[in-house]
Length: 302
Image (tube, rainbow, N blue to C red; front, side):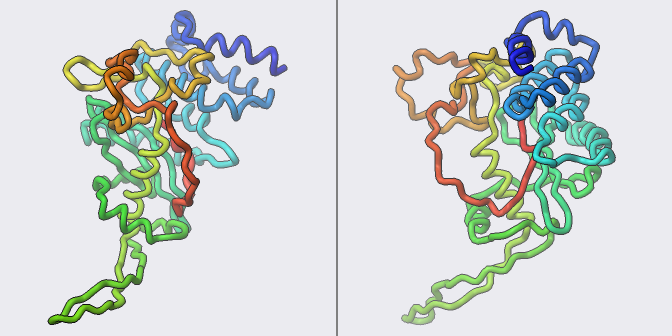
């Protein structure tokens, strides 16, 4: 059955012009049969992320809002027995639209969930018209009431590095850390143990920022940069072809470029400035995996 599912479906993912037209006006139901077939064929896991990115790109092409494709996106992103209850999904669907309206965001994306001992943190991010501008991050404990988090700072990152273990699920919870500080009195210098308190909200900000910088990615062509600088959603993007989807060079870190600035003019000669304006995953060097002290799921990008 795998042989019969793969060819026909991979052709549909290839950005064929007829597929978005066939889906027009049909919504998430148009993919339900394909998703069921992939699951039964045992192909669900390897195709999940590709399906997710393609459907979200098609949703934009069809003029639907991100919140309207949220339920299907959650279905595609869930795995390993993790998921959201029906009431949580319904609350997200409504509250994210209100967040977009009240904060005047161009788009609001559901970032994911970080598990805690007492409660879980549901994370959303608001994007301005310039898609590469600093994103605003919000969290909720009930998927209805949202609180805005401050931007991450180097001081926050330094504090987070000494905190270990699971999240509690209480933003006001304070972790205590004992450290040695040098104190100078008169002409003498001695060390004294000082108890430092770190709020869980600070840890939450640091963890989200660290995950974003490491693994928030976007397919090539989903965004384009105008000659004047701002980055916009590419409304004509219909997904990557099967051959392109297999290449690391087809994916970018969804953040301001770091490595790109260090490239020579010769290395940039073959790059399209309107599409290749972020760091590609092609030249990433794998690092030793370290525990972030958090359990998270549903972290994805549209």
